[in-house]
Length: 317
Image 1 (tube, rainbow, N blue to C red):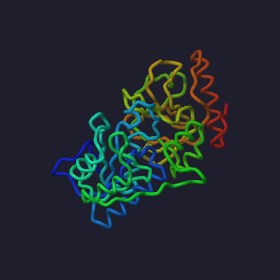
Image 2: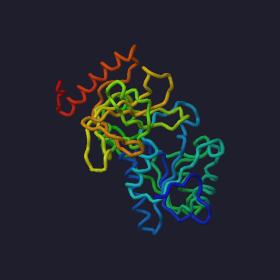
Image 3: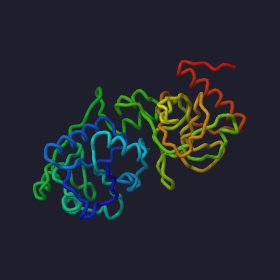
Image 4: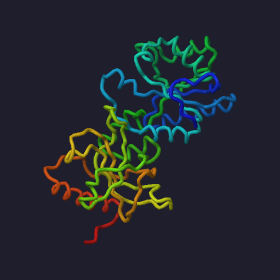
């Protein structure tokens, strides 16, 4: 899969079947859209591609910053797993937001991306002031020589499958609901980076991974302390159990830098630079600011007991 920021140059552009969306979380509804794109591309001899946006349009317009379900790495990995070969990441800025529906169809879809087939969700809107909808896209497709298709919304029970529903479940710590909507257990993948070594000094060494890009005002949708499984730690295929905190470490710093800190049970070693996947199993508690390091240490001891219980284990003292 190729990830291209902005429009491709004239030498690398290819005729494509394109899915348009933000794809935060790549839930079951997104997966249906992507799989239909791959099917349409194969039938027509096109390259299956995705057009997505960074930052999220709602972040740009400043109504309220959306909590992020996926890191960019995880989003792109899930898109790739659906069979997509190209991802175009368009910067959502003043110039892009001012495009009319005609300009978007002509300059971005037709001339810029060589779209020959386009699919969107049935509630899709586009163009300046959201002035275009699916009917507008169909009309413009006839003029600029690309087919259009609307992918129906998916429901689980009586509720629509959506990124908003995933965020709501994450806010409640309902990881079973999250897994149901995503079609897989929720996980975060990233490089292990150096930290302040505070966990090690307290007796709980951690793997540290950043989950939000520096300078971003976004927050992860899932926050707190969790029982987790750790994948890819030592190259043997062993899946380890552990506990993790996803937050800003309010007891020791006022900086709003979102960090995933994972204490791995029954393992010790150096994983710096390794790409590790953390699978979230159960929520233990919300993040809390403690009055002292002693109080924090006691809370972590209790968290470990709770995490052990999730895995059907008990701590031998």
